[in-house]
Image 1 (tube, one colour):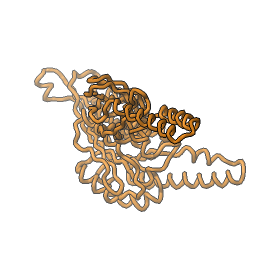
Image 2: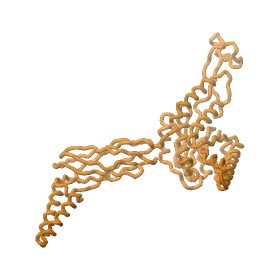
Image 3: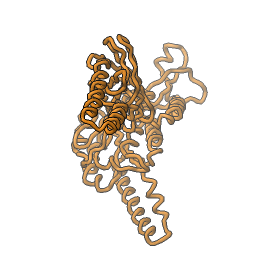
Image 4: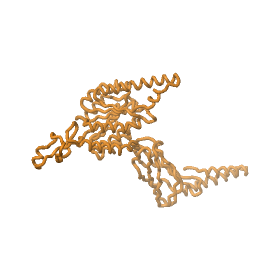
Length: 429
């Protein structure tokens, strides 16, 4: 049971009347009338216990967009229901929770809740509370019911805007490398007739004998290569650069790379590792890999522990037994690298082509230019030292034949895509 504001107003008027009468009998009469009116109102209000609920609507929403969940309510009773409904959700779901409700006897109504989530992950619906107000508007019946529904909030994939440009570069790369010379990482493409100027080493003598014409082989960059993307979800991934967590920028880069590699005909796998394996997408077919990767990334959060590099290395070697492109999205934090990744990197580099992608902090470049006062000079010196240490860490990785790229959060995804296309064009996958 719940009392309304109108009941409070009636009680106030009754109190003034009782004070005017100044008798006990008058006070009891007024109170009795108010209580009787409230009880009558509750008795005449539509029942909320018999209401039937069901949900429909979006199950996946991209962060930064909105979704809608429809709650259907059936009133099997014999009285019209008039009142309010509260559809509660987690705060980060950004739900519009309250709505006026009117359902005729034996009728049905729908209430649409708009979600504008502010964080990734699974957002679960809370309890639905319905308040049925009586005809006098003094009191209401109230009940809550669990109506389960879960919406997964996916990463925003902001780098999707770069995909058409990178696909155009991929098509251009594929066309440029249909050559007569078989290079490293190339595969047979087709036969065509010999023209003056072609390299005689490309002539296919067997096919030429069968066709009574001179045919030459053409080659193109290999397809069906394997790309293993590894996300470091340890302590360093929690740091914010330009207002964005490193992990979020790394996920955006991983999504663009996965979309591009799938369109290039390569296979994509994903691992997310810190002290344990947080996500594992291995062996998915090309049509399913991007939705699976997006789903897995939606649930990832940084872990405030150091990444277990030994676990990372053994997991990679267990997943990728043959040579592949290993893309490691991590931070060039010198202390974390020296105690973690550097001891195992030679072992990985001997078996795979490795590409390390890290997020550069544009704030460091700003600080290095500061000379306005002694505090700015000290900050510039500290920034210069940080830049030098990161460059030294990148140099150590490069000494093992590892390609290292570093870019600000908004440029990491396209820079990583360009590095992948460069390796593919050079036949190094």
